[in-house]
Length: 292
Image (cartoon, rainbow, N blue to C red; front, side, top):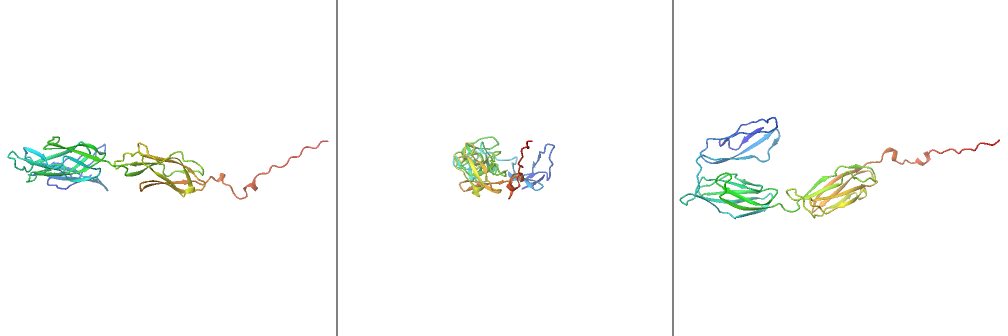
């Protein structure tokens, strides 16, 4: 694995690392000779694959300042939807013993929900202020954001409410690519779609419309158009007499999923040929034996 560091003076990491027998890769880094707090991103890549998100590392100098008080300067409740990045979500003021702004104080934000912070560790400037952006993730819910001068400590807490939203995605679950004989019902697998929110949780009581193209290719049976508690809607398909490919489409609020199905031609022995009736064997008439 190739390792790249955004600031190699701040954080010293090996340029390449190998996997162990279980396929796991460990990267051991050390802080550089820094005199001030800093932040570095560690990017990892292997062949053509690359981690979507880097590791984020904060390096603190041994001489970090200590605050006598840490105060919240932003709202006490943070609300948003999954996927939102809220700029300046958390704003903190640190003051020294003399009541003046304290610079160089390291602050660590954490949350019991899936919230990521940028920077992952804040350091107050000369005004004594540190600011964090917050990105809200799945599965949503209500929780707290805590900020303290050390990891795991709490100087104050901010309530956070993350809305995962309603129906946002239509997903194909099963049934695509099936083939059957004319007139057969594809009973091995129903066609199933799911309606979910952005976190892939099923949404109940949504209406899914099903259609066949061309219409004469098949008939839809056992149609369950209203989604259940897991967000599922389904149909069974009875094939028509016309051999060839056709599609079944599920629609929900402008979203579509298309199933590609096919009616197989009948087997050679089952086909009727012109003049077949003329080729049927005719049983000869029998004659009663003569009596003498």
